[in-house]
Length: 156
Image (cartoon, rainbow, N blue to C red; front, side, top):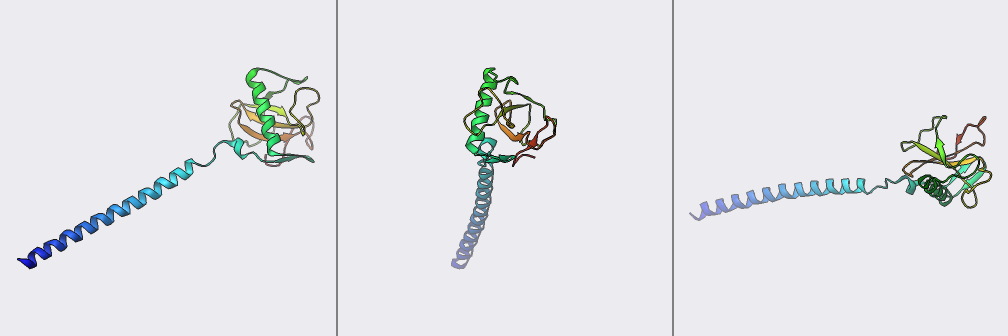
């Protein structure tokens, strides 16, 4: 009887170990999957946070200058305010076919080395943002033919 009880006890222990090992393996795989999904979701999705410094022709701009121009242009767009003889911000049609990382429709707004555009000469450089206020790219007339644009660094 003692041997039979001992064998039964070993079977119960073995079954319990197998069951616990399976649970532990499942928990480990589940935890890894959850962490992977969480890290994917935590990636920055806001393009504005990925804006970087850019160079248009020979003029360099900091990321802060680009953000300021987008912020001012989008604020004016929302408020229905325009500046200058070309009424900035205004619709940007992307005739050049840039591959922006966000969907349009797009607006363009002058990019300045000092402050933000409030009238006068807009210069050659522009920020492009969509009508949700998300930065799409930076373009310039410098080096382009006619009234076309070419991409500044980071925009193609």
